[in-house]
Amino acid sequence: MDEEKRKGWGTATETGDIKEEMIDHIYKRLKNIQWEPHPLNENVQLGFILTKEEDGVEITNLLVKIPKGEVVPEHTHQVHDILFPLSGKGKVWIKGIGDLNLKRGVVVNVPPGAVHKVYEVTQDMEVYDVFSGPIR
Image (cartoon, rainbow, N blue to C red; front, side):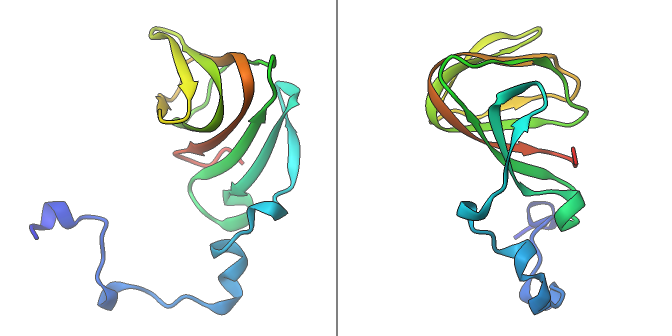
């Protein structure tokens, strides 16, 4: 394989040792996630999975529960906000792009600094959300 395609993929001889005490940062049971209200809508729940604060990673990923009829109002992030809807239906609006359907089978990559919102949630939604950098 050429070196350009291989970037980011090491071989077994190039990996570091993993310590057993790291297990809580490597293997997580989603049933143990601590849910907290979204800072812009307390009826939307956030379940952080990996964070810099807790796990020392340079990304943030979480599950987001958005009940039918709720809205996540206009906001921005300094990093990419990548939305993977797992269930339910709604819309995401991105300034400069417009309205996009938010449902299972799509991925939405909101660029850093882009004003966006989630609205018209017609079925309870669960979204796997990945931020390209730490937000906490």
